[in-house]
Length: 155
Image 1 (cartoon, helix red, strand yellow):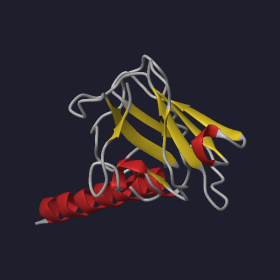
Image 2 (image 1 turned 180 degrees about the vertical axis):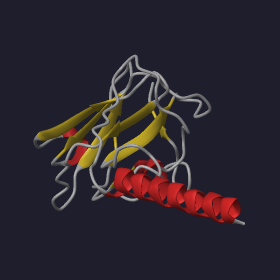
Image 3 (image 1 turned 180 degrees about the horizontal axis):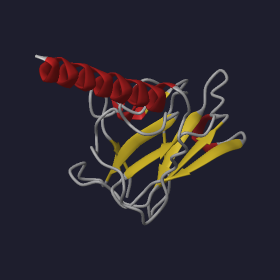
Image 4 (image 1 turned 30 degrees about the horizontal axis):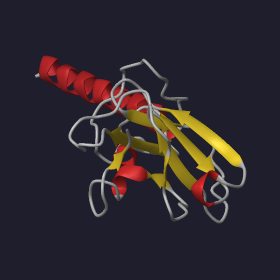
């Protein structure tokens, strides 16, 4: 009987320690994660990245802007794109932020992004940039694109 109690107590102690260490990992600090051309560490193309990559989520880093860019067929991810965020429509105004896409077609950053009253994105592959006609106030690109609006794409 004593051995059983000892095993139960040790098991609960280990579970408590494990739970506490996992909680601290997800609740405390934001891990810096920024996509870069040529890298291939990202995953889950087309899904809303912030479902996991947000405070309290299971993903590493709390993304402020993230999404997936496809080629003009909208069937294949477009590698190594550039996403720019401007203060005015069609690439006018001030260029505030540039995020490089990775080899998997995904772009993401944990950097602080000040959306203010809205920023206007552009996506560029090897051809001229494609501009979004409306301002964004959130960086959850795949929460709309590919769900209720067309996928992000470029040439």
